[in-house]
Image 1 (spheres, rainbow, N blue to C red):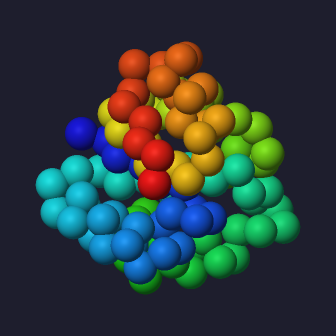
Image 2: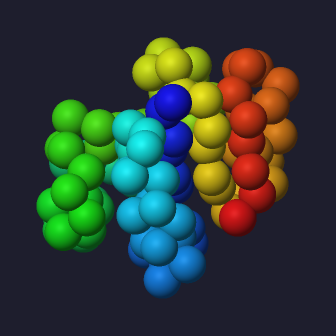
Length: 100
């Protein structure tokens, strides 16, 4: 199963980090963030490297909605703190979207 986390307000929290660590025991974990890769990648990569999430599983949407990345990468479950993103993922994909 593929599980993804938003970075801001989700994975960067202690609760989000703990959830990702649990999921990594049995699932492929991704980070899907609306951050701009060219200007805001450093903090995301610091955390992904520390957690052991490969950089190939860090997806920057550069301000676009996350549902497209969820669909493209075949994500099964996505955790996000923004209700509008959760709603769009539910509407446009088969993934389970969870409000964090």
